[in-house]
Image: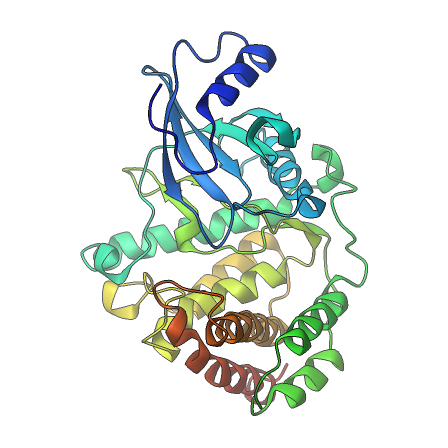
Length: 343
């Protein structure tokens, strides 16, 4: 048997596949960890002929939140017959005795994931614009899916979704408050007092951005990945967060969050993509500054939480030492969205 990657017992996995999906694996398994640490762990698994992708929670995962694997598996499976490109799913195992935590197995989708400015630098304006348009079109397709028609009517609590999100992230901030963050209290108050009414209940991805998509050789979106934050809610939450990711390299050039999108690489301004989304979704995007402000508020709180743990020596790794300096600029930009863009 091949060397065991951390968190993956290949003998136990092979036995589970033989029981639950007989015939899927034709021989002994090998595996490689391809992503992990901060979020769910992702591996490629092979029987020497076929290859799949396995996702499981991080090591030391608390079983009380083990439903995350089932939620990811459920939403990907539900979207299989829609216009949203997702990997095929093969197996969900919620028994923690197999690998120490629930996991699922899905198709390996081949293509390119653009994560860095170095990767996108050579695209050219035409390809960058094509990729951008297709990314937005897929988001509009996702938000056009009727949750009830794909078996996701009970996938979340859409009523009051954004108001609950504002409060949820406030609680997260209070749990890691260790210093004064200029403007944070004002931002919270303004967001809380002006929550827009949702125009539609939609499946919300929760972290929609370029590096959560696989592009095929023709620059089409072959698959959307990382559905661990998916729920039912307000679709403009996805668009607002995408806008922040799109613009963060301009606003914060030195950031460990996202660097693949830049005007220098030929990517269009987000205003062009918002107009395209509005046309394809039929939604009014005039309230987007509020959602953009909320997305910056959320990212600021995530960054502050990681900074807090880093200062305590509880988080190590590349880029974490720089997250603390992102917090106040994100808060300032969020207030600007509210005050100058008319939200």
